[in-house]
Amino acid sequence: MASSTSSHPPVQAGAPGSASGGSQVQVLWSPDFLQYDFGPGHPMAPTRLDLTVDLVRSLGITEADGVDVVEPVSADDATIARVHDVAYIQAVRAAAAGEEPDLSVGLGTVDDPVFPDIHVAAARIFGASWDAAGAVWSGRTQHAVNVAGGMHHAMPGAASGFCVYNDAVAAIRRLLDDGAERVAYVDLDAHHGDGVETAFWNDPRVLTVSVHQSPATLFPGTGYATDTGGPQAPGSAVNIALPSRTTGAEWLRAVDAVVPEVLRAFEPQAVVSQHGCDSHSLDPLSDMRVSVRAQAQAARWIHDLTHELCDGRWVALGGGGYAVVEVVPFAWAHVLGIAAHRPIPDGTPVPDAWRERVRDLAELEPPEVFEAADVEFAAWDDGFDPDLGIDRAIQATRKAAFPLLGIHDPF
Image 1 (cartoon, rainbow, N blue to C red):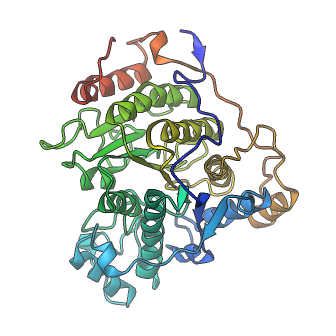
Image 2 (image 1 turned 90 degrees about the vertical axis):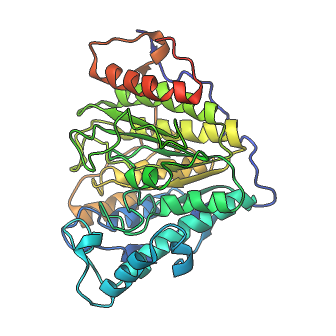
Image 3 (image 1 turned 90 degrees about the horizontal axis):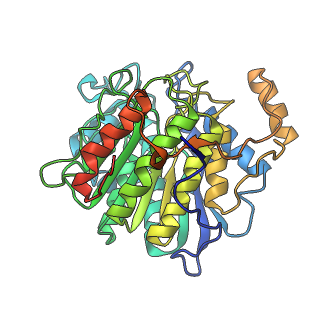
């Protein structure tokens, strides 16, 4: 098979989008995001957000022209109820007030322990993604980024997998409420985007695409290639379930073999993407081997596709990522730089002050430079090898989903 970096043509940075008189990108941020804190020892440490924003500021991205940093507002109960059951919202509020948490709705578990600010903190993340989607659809900004978001496991009536309120569903719901007729959701987290898929399983207006480690070996145990949407929305769910120890080149082969084709067939009017970076080899909660370079490359592809397909209307969210120092700040700095049309070049020095802070905080020696060069991979069009687990996974997805989306698959 020949090597490639992409099987679809790149779109130049700075391509025009729908924003008229608005910002190039809105970054939803407040130090109050750090209040979403399950406590010492929990994998989802708020330090990952703090270090990401500190790194981006050190690079000058948030201070650049066309970048608007917006203070998020906690969503009210009526807005949260566009996504979640009222009884569940009441249960979260009750637990925050000190009542015994309701284990039946996922509160008070090892994954989702209760803390006093749990409702307000989760509602703030939800509200940020809700407002980000509104800004993108209205044209007040072309792209919007909420790195604190991506809480893709929360269900209508339950917390799950570190996620209390599902802000990814909120962003999609806001786009639909504001008039979008087709919204695509792309989830790059190592874990299946089950809460988002569940919310729109039977809604033909929403295409959910999830690239994740096989549910046979990783939480939440869903997202097989044959899961393709409900009876009223066949083909609305696309799942790429990858083998453990999938490398960056293999992961990019899978993304490239499926995501551009299904998005082009669906023709979305806006894209919401989730950039969980827990597929990295250093992450303690998955068995994948995907580098930051590969993750950044996929983010560039998503960005380019939004310009190609929907005038750049793009809401980018964070997600999983538990290598708090070595991976998350770098992966999400790339996402923010791409959204601002200021991608971080390969070899860019990591600011000395940030490196010194990391040494003091974690007693680790941080990287000296950013790695952003494209990862070479074998493009799907170059051939299919049934003896390779990655190829069998890709083919299973294409076989299950492509016919339902009207895509001809020659393999």
